[in-house]
Length: 227
Image 1 (tube, rainbow, N blue to C red):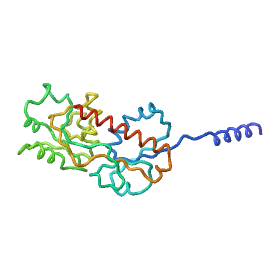
Image 2: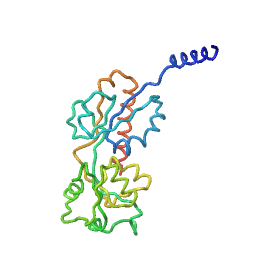
Image 3: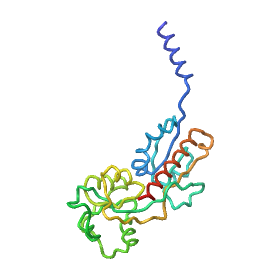
Image 4: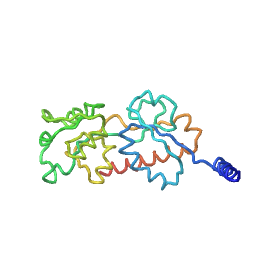
């Protein structure tokens, strides 16, 4: 009986112990893996003590449902109530291991490599070539992968050149896993936007995380403008 009494007492203590607030974030898989997760250690440094749940989805319908506190959605900004976090752009990236010299001497050299394509947005190479006013350039080899995260992973492994989103490549560029295959960044009309649900408005913890995301995005924006 004494053991049972001690177990009941321990359970009561746990039940009465204040719980850390939970915040659920919904984002694109590639954004979560490439931009958000590498920054989570800074959330603790900002003294925001929460338990996070990171969910991912590529479907717009999931962002309409109020099943999250905060969402980060990729769009042109027409989403009701959305706040711009950061603009996006395109630039071809590759592993430095693919180069025999510090950089490519001319843009046509891109065609010597395998081009990696994102099945979700398979027009990115065409967009970049058209905006860069490069006519007739193509590669005879191509690999199509599931999404932006998979194409960047393949680029890091030296499979070929990926058309990278400027928001998603920053960590890999900084740590030397990727380099710009050709230093021409093309801005896009679309970008990453912050959505705060009705749940967020009732949660000081979620509001603190949303504010932190805006601050991190501002820091990122200043870094990009200094390039």
